[in-house]
Length: 436
Image (tube, rainbow, N blue to C red; front, top):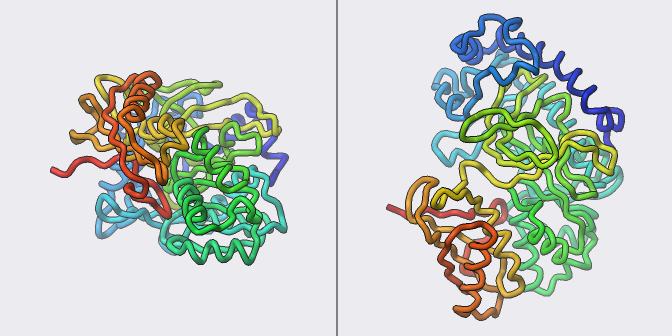
């Protein structure tokens, strides 16, 4: 463990510490954040004392990403929630800006250090150790994932940064420099399995024995994890972060039974029902949308931030000795499709399709006919065949029946030749709405 005294502290003791941190954070917001001053006063709270502690948190309004975007102007491009003068900001990350202007994420020196600490806790859970070599495929900028790379320095590892977009360089480095661990998205890891098979590269016999995946759901899906472990001959663990809150907030240990909260003491965790916004008690097997609150952040703190990640959570102590809650990300609530009243996540369809390997490659693309979440059946799903695979009406029908039995959703399965659906060196796109 990176910090055993912290990571094994009884959770009730952690909550008591967090309550004191939360009260200080609320006082900080009321004193320094114009965004939250207005938001909390609109909700009827004039002082930090009126807001109280963690036990009263559910009475406060949630924070939506759209609110932060709306508060951004030419004069305040980072948003009205920024709570420090610009001369205290040492790093500014940004989102990809796929919906327009990128969102900017500023950090103070202490914020950045806290991010590296949480990332070090999260990644060290995988079993990587001081002195090992790790190769990474995340770019250092402009995206927040770059901040996680500092964790490997903090852990005392030999870090080999390659970045995205250069598979030949990556595989050459693995062959020559012989790292024992690699970090990338599960989509890229799956692509590299195919790349290696096509070129006779012995990926299973490589030096990589630990594969750390993050950046998108998938690393915790049983079938996809098994495929990656077979392709790489390595143990797969996953990590997860949220750009506006912190990178690598969660990290899975070698028990492979959910990602531990590495950001304990820095971030408070809630679950809510995404439709009613009511709180869901944290307990083994509880499912809901993840809501996160900063406890020590200074540059752009978030209070009850809706992550849109739909997760399952466990609160029992793990066999590894860590006491923080564990989560498995089921999917993004904003990727959710509703077919005749049945909620289905694209990743769940992929998980079912992966049961049919080796007849299929495991790559899918859902093509909804209507805009938005609500869809009429059957849901169109393209399923890619394995290399040299033969698509038959019987296979399509069997997959369709399995999806219906497991997810209670009617689908229309289109089997497409191997290589038809796009691969990614970063994140996979599972849904493609039809152009209008």
